Length: 240
Image 1 (tube, rainbow, N blue to C red):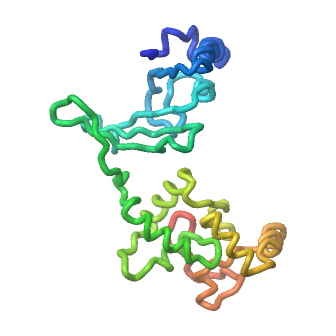
Image 2 (image 1 turned 180 degrees about the vertical axis):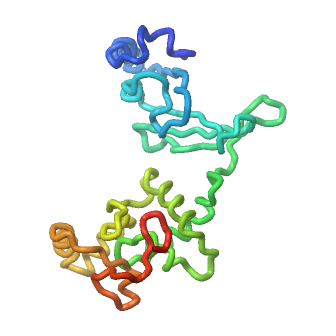
Image 3 (image 1 turned 60 degrees about the vertical axis):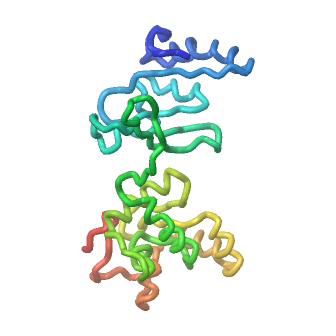
């Protein structure tokens, strides 16, 4: 266990120094020894995978990187959220822990990421499993089952922003009016190809000719390729 790692690094901001310090530890891992190293985070908020202080080369030399954060940015909470990047599929991508009242142990607690994602994921999954094509956020909102409370478009955007990095859904598009973000289950494409032999050719033609994407809700309203002055949802979910 290296706690902390910083004293072993001649210069933590230099990628070469990181390489020279970390590479010899491979001699241990090749002998079946596990190495746990603790490193200080940088100041301020950082994207996942960029929390470590100093050179980003450090992340390339570890098999599992775990970042510890305060849920909701509350420094007084007894909870900590662990976010993991790993070379192993068995590694949980995130875990919420809470220190028990005796301050003797951390226990895992249900994690809804404070935005209702887990509560709504099963409904999202049903929408994607029944999808006839790749869906815009407006499509997903329109296809939301009537038996479940429908989230606002802003909340839906947050759910999708969580689902994509986790690999739960695929996404393409620029978010612009004629090229909105489109979401789908990758495994669903096999069904579309089987039931529409021209699926790949039509997708390629649309991209090559830069044709506007007609969403499912537009098709159901009987409208075609013109977006005209009618109300439409932009990539921020506002009606314009």
